[in-house]
Length: 196
Image (cartoon, rainbow, N blue to C red; front, side):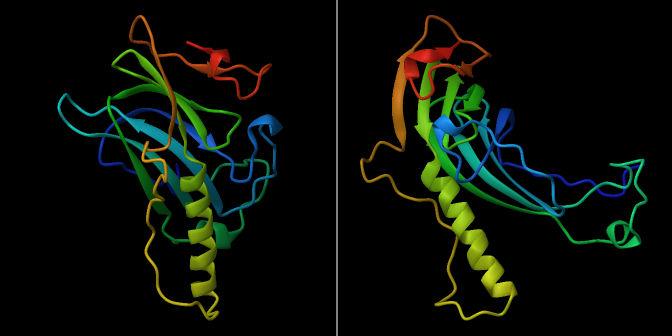
């Protein structure tokens, strides 16, 4: 029996997602940190919408995630954890894409994301600004909850790319559509070191 389960929905189906680690640099690798509940997780996902519909890269923050009743059988569950009815929350920022996404991977959990589209292209996007925007908005929300003075109410808005390239760093043609992609752990940040 599960005490609590959370659902996070996007407006398009997604085949692939990855976890992002705010503040992580591409060369630093994923850092292991102890879990503290309620959890906050940052993720990125690519949509797989039917032909003719818009596709998106979703950068999301999932927050207020609590343990399920039997996550740790060996520990005695605190009644406070069981009775917690706090609703999980999601915040989402999007990037418009040209094609459906078959597979995506972030580079060591940072905001640089490679995706393999159904149009047989591999694209690299920089979602760092989107991730930073979600982190900053979370700090703003905490200030509101704690009753601190905040300048004025603000909306969560996706950042704009000053280069007008929709945060696209690089795009490669591939000989066929694919479903597997991985960054090289040996040559961090080199786009020619992506395995497809």
